[in-house]
Each structure stands twice: as C-alpha cells, then as structure tokens.
Image 1 (cartoon, one colour):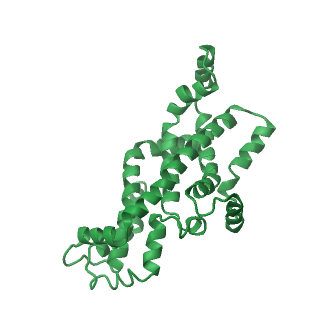
Image 2 (cartoon, rainbow, N blue to C red):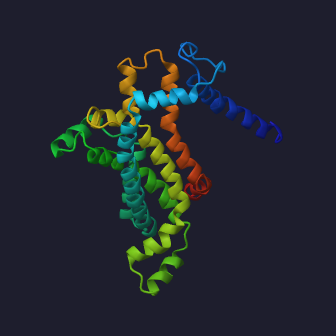
Image 3 (cartoon, one colour):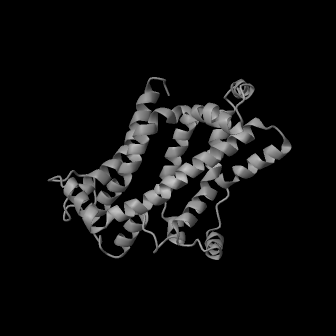
Length: 270
C-alpha cells in the first residue's frame, strides 16, 4: 500500500468503525418513539434529542444515579492514581530480584481476572458488601495494576539526578515524590485517569454483584429501568440515556487529551 493511501485508508476505517455507531446512537436518541422502534441510520424527521434527554433525566431519576457514580468513581480514581504512582516510583527506582517479583505481582491483575464470587463473600465477611467503600476497594484491587504498569515505565524516563539533587537539599522521600516526581507524572496520570474513569464509570458487572440494589450508579440504573420495562421498545430514550451517561467522560477526555498521547508513549517504551 502506498504511503499516500495509508492515511486516507486509516481515516476512512476510523470513520466507519467509530462514526457509524456514533451516528446511530445520536440519530436514534433524536427520534420520536415511532421512528425509533427499529433503529437505523436514517436521520430523524424532527430532532427531539434535548426533549428525550430531559425526559430521561426526570423519569429515570438520573441525578441520584449520577451522584452514586461520582461517589464511587472520584475516590477510586484518586486512590488508584496516588497509591499506584507511589508504588510505581518505588518499583522503578529499585533494581533487585525482590523488586522484580513485586512488579510482576503488581501488574498481574492486568491478565488475572478477579474471582467475583470470592470477592463478594469476602466483602460480606468484612461487612462491606453493598457499600461504596467495598466497591471502591474492589476497583482498587482491579485497576492498581494498570496504573503501576503505565507509571513504572514513565518513571524510568525521569533522570534520577533530579531526585538526588532534592535529597541533597534536605528533602525527604515524601517531599521528593510530591515536589519532583508527581508533577512530572502528569502526562501518564492523565492517561491513567481516562482509562480508570472509562472502566469504572461504565462498569455494570462488578457493581451489580457488589452494590446492586443498595447503591444506584448510572449503568445499574439504566439496566434496572430497561429490564423493568420502563424503556421497553423506547430505543430513543435508551440511547438518550447513553448519551447522558457518556457526557462526563467526554468532558474528562477533553480536559486531559493533550497529555494522553505523551503518557501512552512515555510509559510504553519502557
């Protein structure tokens, strides 16, 4: 394939893979109930997107589910980034067999799926089943590996002389990490933020078993109202809900997108 054709082919492939499903969601969300019974790629005769989103916002009790999602996502992302970056910094600056073993153990969660039944039983024994704290703990155990994997490689690109200079000036380990290392980790942490937010915000599988029925999140709420028949054959409302649920992620991506590419490339090469 000629070099001049490759970019065109890539753009067309991206437009097909991403553009068509995206248009299907937006077009269906903007239709009336009658037009949306059989979802297709045709444009609505009269756009009702805002009206459908408003109806979903009130009928499905989206504000309560939104707050439930924030209650879980915000602490999870903050703790995963802080604990994961601190662990990655230590693992990147130590070179021994024990450190290598700890690193392998730390990133094993990427390929080893958690045992859901065992996790739920353990949370029940601890009295954390059905609580936000229990759900946050589950996500910490699952996604710390992702942050450790990304950040460890990125830390190795930071000259150790910067930390040594700060230590000579009298800075302790906490001060070195907070003043020197953490600011340099912004690109990779922005990447990790997008990934963790995407995983946790859209998760329905683990949330269903851990907090289902006791705490409402946006994916759980959508599953509940759809399975209860509230949105039966109302595809315009279901897709309007999907758009509402996706808007916060779009905002997060728009804020952090400048750092994402540098974060991925900086951590991946190591």
